[in-house]
Length: 415
Image (spheres, rainbow, N blue to C red):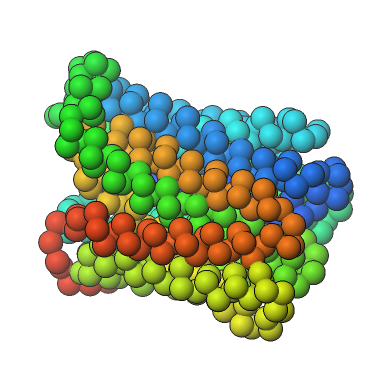
């Protein structure tokens, strides 16, 4: 007997997966403010710990995409989160830098795999006129996970020497709940109908010139967003700590205030993405982020200490524009641009390159790694965002099925 999937079930299982993943990836930003003193970590070691899940996701995304196109979406959605839960739990028990680095890398394998499969699965199980709003809603939960990490992290990190372990353990608990819930998901019917019968068949389709052009365009735009997105988000408490000399707990709390505007921008995207289209939102998002970061980077570079409300507002606006545009659209348009038979592989290819952008953004911060280098880093982020706006204008087609009226939340089936 076939199990019936509803948009509610599919969306929430994908959304809660992102909640757990984004929580665990982001939580390290609060933990590191504590660990760099407790474990005497170098700047390079803190950057490596931050980048580890992104490095793991590079491998996980491509491998999972291929296997999902060959063997099915549901099976991979279970396997990838099984790996995530185990690795997240062991990371919480890490006894030092090496073991924490290892398990956060393995955790990234599961996260990369989930992105490569969850969004093709959603696209194939949601009505075309609602899929933009549904996938934007799921990606909005990614921002909720980041805010949750700042909030939970800022509280638990102050609960003694082992507080950081509790911060990391929460991610494993969230992941275990997701794994149990996903057992109810059925397989994608569109995939069943267009399934290719061998890896060679998948490979031949992916290597067609049209598909290579699509993958290249999507990958570059995803890369540019991830440079700024991961660099800003994962080091937000550290940036705040450098700018205003705040403690780990204080910087986590301040990060929540800065990040809240992103949630509002994400909610706006859910309402308008199917009516306005993907391309205008991505263009505005890249452009707004670049223009907000530019004056902040110049001020820091020149040694001008901005008032808290000015610098905080610029950071909040930069994060909000990203959340409104490329944070959602780079993922959604990639799924929409590939045919069903190779959709997960194409998503995985583009994500793999995009994750390399995240690694670059994190390691860029680690390379400068001192207060005197913060201005240069922010200016690079601004330049990358402006380049993203230019390439979006030149290369990204509109992928929305049609223009439809803005939807109410209850119409999405996710109330």
